[in-house]
Length: 172
Image 1 (cartoon, rainbow, N blue to C red):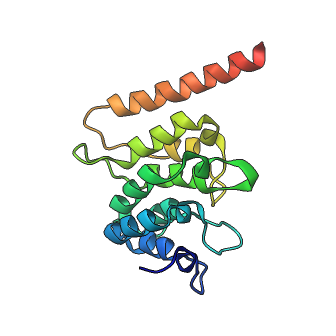
Image 2: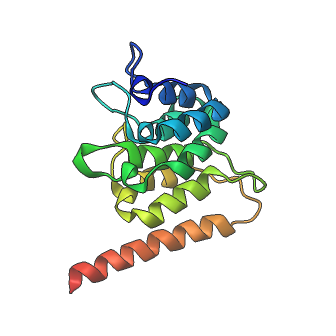
């Protein structure tokens, strides 16, 4: 296997080998690379405007790589999705989870990933993504094809709880 420093070499578009796996949806290769060089999970591509990390690239560029996104999300450090320092990764991840329309109950779906990251980093709900859109706007603009509205109700409750918490913390 290659030395770890070789994994950091980027292609002409600034993508590391893990970024390329994310783009094409190669989950098995991503697992091998992460095992050898986990620091690649937090290295964004070379695009000077967005610097998307692999988990976000998996949802942004290729709708066929949801399984790769699920794997990468499970191993990506939560801090990599924080909105600090002008990063759009967290908000882009959440909006792409919402827009991916993967609502199959038998699969760990993208809405579950979005809810999980929002519970860990609630400030992302109003943070702007790569297209200057917030996750709450993405959610509001979606029509949900649920036979049961329980998941939608949980989203509404979560947003209400965040808003209530925000109002209480600023009032006192």
